Image (cartoon, rainbow, N blue to C red; front, side, top):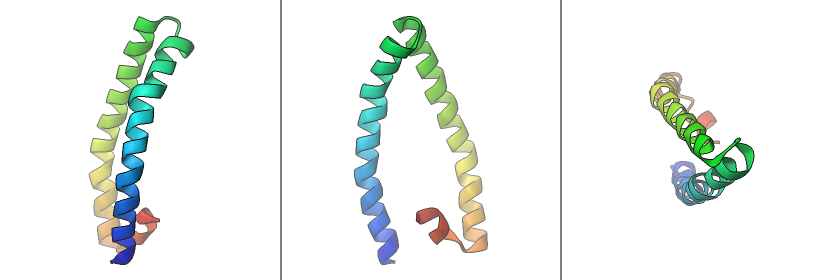
Length: 78
């Protein structure tokens, strides 16, 4: 139980950092520096984030169910 609690604390702290970097810093960098122009960069970024969110929403429950059935939740927590 302590491992799960420790992971929850780690995930809470890591989620804020990741959200700030991905949402504000890297998205701006991608749109202005990597993409051919800022408008196209914002469009590409929006599509990439949307598709990724959809994949996570579809695959996450399957992986969770697999972990619960095989009793290997520690593997996914590590």
